[in-house]
Image 1 (spheres, rainbow, N blue to C red):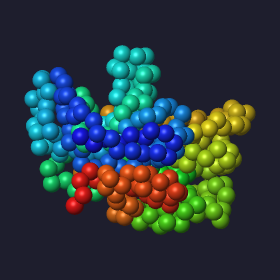
Image 2 (cartoon, rainbow, N blue to C red):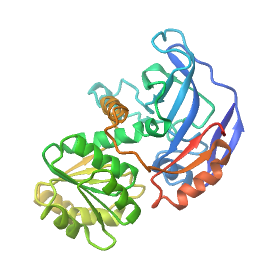
Image 3 (tube, rainbow, N blue to C red):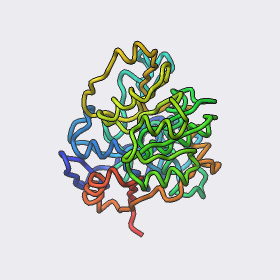
Image 4 (cartoon, rainbow, N blue to C red):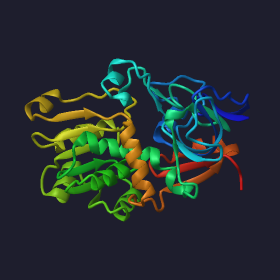
Length: 340
């Protein structure tokens, strides 16, 4: 079989490898499509703090069941599926508390261990979710990233509150949509890309503000006439985080979704004196993933125009270079395993 390997910064190669054996309790998948996430771009650039080269990339994917291992009786070869790519140890302090997404032995496919960038992939049945056989691949490929937004809405406790999302890329947009679907009173997205602002407007988000022309404080005033109840940081830009603290009113909740690759200096006194609540937000719980799948399958999520670029397996180096160069512009790049 073929597999993609990131050998070092900005270097992707295609290698031949043995097809994995389908073990007891596992499912062998024939990969059909993967999505390129911001994390994949960080890994490709060598700027993710939690990975080491070489690594097989990608964690967003859809596949067809090729084979099932001993003990797997509830899914059959030929079934179209998606994969929950956050593997937990089930034994650590966090897992025992039911917080498996914050596993102390956190293992994300394509980062801490080899990911979905190979023709075949074997994984435990618990991480495989059947899809409708006539599901639209252009829609179900977004289940995994939408789960991030669902978990961000959960962390923010957004029902009945005003929510401002900083960063209008795929995750930021999905977070704002998830907040709306979770019962937020009003939602807003801020970004410096006018294309992403237009996408937010099309997605049914209440306010979309280009902050290349306004500060975040001015944006909050424009959207809500004051401070938002919840601010969700999907930008992961150090200079922007200081603006987020400035924008926050007393008792505002701040949820950090974006994956910061560098250390950030923070005004702790402002957090203390204003009784701000700052929460981390790492991937999602299983129930968030299931909810994301339900929302996308029932058509509640706006997805038109989210795919910016399409590539094939053989074009992986070109694809990743383009994704890195245009990370502030693209919404979602996808890669199909077979050329039409």
